[in-house]
Length: 377
Image 1 (cartoon, one colour):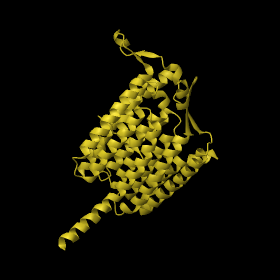
Image 2: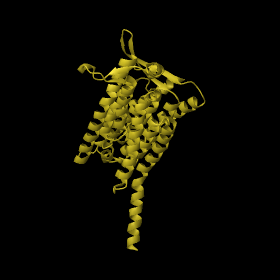
Image 3: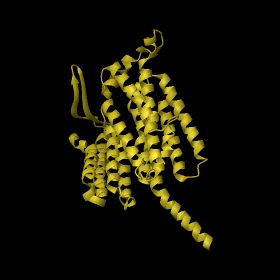
Image 4: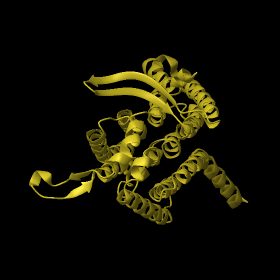
């Protein structure tokens, strides 16, 4: 039965490939292909949630042996536990609604098929990220999301502002991703594996290990290796989740079409950071220094973004800074050890922010029409 859950990430990927290759012939039927694929993925996510929530053991689904050299083996696989299925419901559910909305919203767009191909790929990347059983898969999906965000934000390529915004978003995320890469490399050097469950099992026994940061220069500066690993990984989370000082990219992402903004803010990209912190919570809680840094960064971001949002006049910018602030609260919750609260906040915020982005336009038009009618009378 567990093998059927491979279709949850596979269907969006297949839809993306079909639309990319046959979009010219499919035309506006491209949207229906994406809606159907994401809809089935959502149905399977509900099935997985029902199976896991009744107390069944986590499911491990091996996929492919990517690398084998001596005792070093990198297996690509999927892992479903209660955290995974909760995020799957959010991602596939919001993505399904966004796809349905986009199928009408994007009618008449010259790049209609391209839009849905990238949207399906974006959904595939986030779904695979939360189902990944090792850090290498997480990093690969992390980068695919960055590429998809660039393509979607620059969708209206005729507008220079969209192109400039997409470039800024990509560069800021790429800079933060260097920290994530260093963290993964240091994790492998320390634990000898990239499998998340093995890393979490071995983490308590490695809590006393130290690393000399200035060893190359003949100086002594020892730091706990787990502290270095978690700080590097947190830098990657700061980038994807728009935390200070990497928060600058999220307001620029508002140059994307409204459905893209809804998907980025509600179900993908910004939720990747809190998810990774919760997934590696056992490792992070072994480092009080990292916990303090996470709490401080989250608190500063939450307060700063909330204050900045008060001075905005554009509704999409207000929603953008609101997202930065709310993600800051989630990060702060992780920093104080309230990981369950962070996930609850993420699920509630994702549903609310998806609704706000998809409904604000019609509400503004309704308000403008009412104001116009009132001025005439």
